Length: 346
Image 1: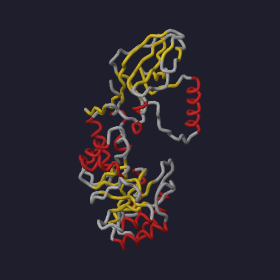
Image 2: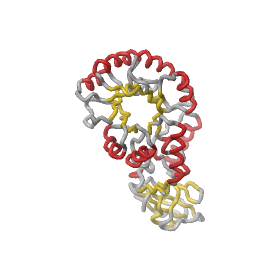
Image 3: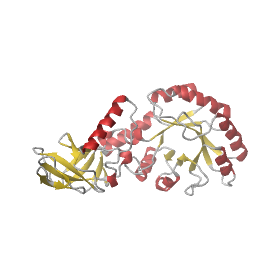
Image 4: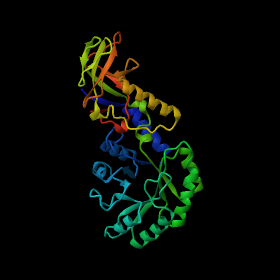
């Protein structure tokens, strides 16, 4: 009775090969829930692609990736001395964004491998221009192995080239013993422009969503119908004793809050249309008629009540076709926020 992610294996693998051909310096990212596919599977696929470096989100994810991938493992979360999960291994590359963390790593005897992160307009992690220059002197004195500089750019509809050019001025001035620049959220055209502008450097795109989820049509998600109950207007149902607004069917399908159904991550709508949609959906929530992500015969159906932990209850109006128990129905999900009961790769 699962919520299932189906993957057309041939089509998915063809997409991965096409991405590698387009971005030969790619650093695949496998973090969080593994984009719905799981970190272990993505680590194996990174090895299949033949890349030399795989990025994970945190130190706790290293143990999921490293046994299944033979290359270097870049940890995207910045190193902190108090992180008890920190892994020190010759294959692990630490991201560093503070001078005090460089000092701590420099005190170790195993000469850790590091990537120095330059803070961007995101203002998330990283060194400013002055500290990047200081970091260059510190790593040289300490003998740390500098694998590159990281630039994590925001998701933006505007070009990142001007910002990266400003940041690269700081990188060049720092005199670091590296030619690798690890970048996030740059387009193919932007990467081409920067590669031509800085021929002495290698720009390595860290890509997750576009790589693993770039062909969504090859990755349908389906829920299993578990039960169907006819109701008349006024019939009581569900945890909260709601009443049916009119005759129809309460359809019980697999997939609930434990899977991430009904817990959609905020998208941060940037346009007026997106914000208006959020307001409209809020009105539906208040009225108790909430559109679900489940689609039956091309129509997106309403939740009969908020999703339960393992299942969801949908309301089908009278006259609508009622799927039989065991039938699968389509469901739209945010892959990065969904825990599937099973993943089936053909």
